[in-house]
Length: 192
Length: 306
Image 1 (cartoon, helix red, strand yellow):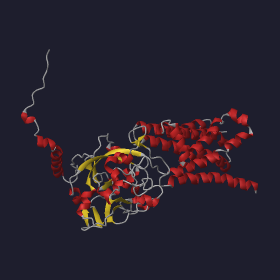
Image 2 (cartoon, rainbow over the protein chains, first blue to last red):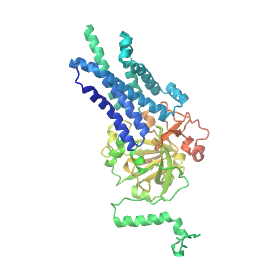
Image 3 (cartoon, each protein chain N blue to C red):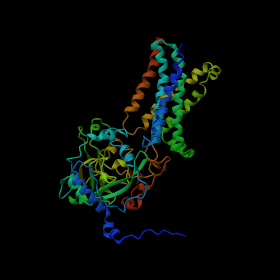
Image 4 (tube, each protein chain N blue to C red):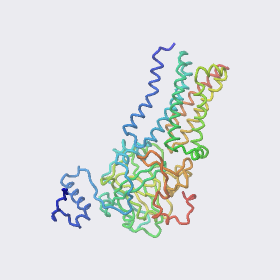
């Protein structure tokens, strides 16, 4: 069992990026606050996805199965930051101009990929409750397999939008490759 | 009812008209005197006259203009130049102007500062990334410099080169772009009165992160066309290769005129976010300078020559 304080502490830790963004924006530190919010929320959505996907490999490595109790919260925080990211685009970037947004989704590959990633995450967030886990039974795990394509799309979305310097998105690509690779490797090892 | 009239103004208090009209020079002279007294350590205010080419739009603050920069020689984050540019040494500095010129030569920065009367040019700047600012540059027309070297009839293009000394601009150690940073203009674009060499900002010398000590400003083109910290200007017959179009020819062309109808392959150029504003505004053809520059491109297919 996890000590009682772990979950509340993790919750507060996951809120820190939001607090930081709010404080800096209120103080007027970022010169382009909309861009800053967009980048920060996108970054933390990606970090959240990577952390969520790190839980299972960490369980294998540590043998500490109770870690799985933290996975839902990490996943929901990833979704929370992804929603903030999408909302910034919807409201501050496009001002709910649905026609223009749809054109962007169709015409700009990096938006297409990001939007697809978000659409894939949406049912996962909705079915994250205990009730849905019970109702869906075995299909719950099948449905939540979608987190893999969603994360890959999210990293591609980042890679595709960068103007020139690919260092940052490549770091996320490497981390994600490691996390997904660990799963493939273990599957191969067990089937051997 | 008691009506208070203002006290009549004594004739001696009225500023003579010629002094009033030349108040900037007058203040400049005062500033220059103060400077001479304070010695070279004092911040060098640049006296400049106003220009009809300036916009009346609200200017961005010095903090905005000098802390949100693309200057890859100091790193690719917007905050990198303001944090890293202290390694740039702007004195001594000289610019070699050569190529298809009758009198090619090297100009010291001191000469350049006195080459032509300095003007304040309040220009819109539109970045290819989709943001914009309004910036009060201080500078002089590039044409004034080019005329000094007597361009020959073969001078069809002008190439610009930025400093690439790794000790001063450490970002060139990363091969993000093919250094030195190179840009270019057609000769008629270079000679256009809107095209200036800027040496100052907000009435003072240029901050290093903005391209000190001397940089190009071409307000109807995307910002990356305006080379910073220039060390060489070359007149030539052929169109010069430019850093961004060498890096990605499909996304960045030689002309790179601000054009809301020609999108970047990955994003729309129809609108922009003016720094300091919450919502996006429409991007104007040639960044709002169409009346002055549209004639340069008459008959050209701007979708092809992007």
